[in-house]
Amino acid sequence: MEMKPELCRVEDALGILVGKWKPIILLILLQQGTHRFSELKRGVPGITQKMLTKQLRELEEEDIVTRKVYPQVPPKVEYSITEYGTSLEPILVAMHDWGTAHTHRKLKKAHI
Image 1 (cartoon, one colour):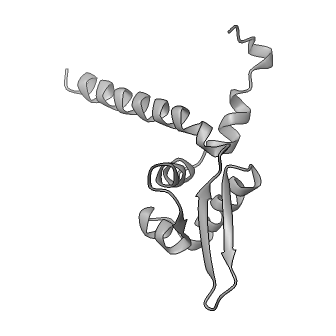
Image 2 (cartoon, rainbow, N blue to C red; image 1 turned 90 degrees about the vertical axis):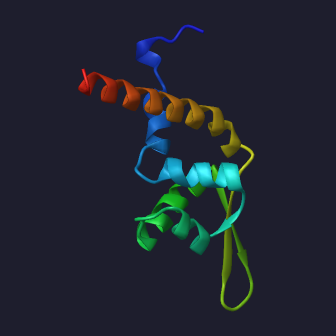
Image 3 (cartoon, one colour; image 1 turned 90 degrees about the horizontal axis):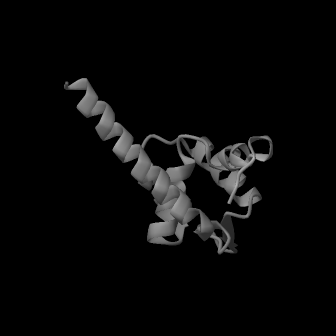
């Protein structure tokens, strides 16, 4: 497939995935399945409640994550990856693999 630079959609994709926390949130949901808010917060050390809420809302707006609220007290809310969201898995894996290789390359270069 030929990609014309003037029609490049990489920026659109990065606009959805960029952020310190989104890839981690997505990998948790892809690999471990549905999580409650508190479970996600524990799974992403260092994230604030406000930031987790913001990131989840943004992913929900893009139809990548779904939010299910159970009518009970106290409220129970679960987050899951959507079928559409699962299409991001090979992209995230490729980015992870590239990031790992790049880090090793930099470390090797620093020790020369």
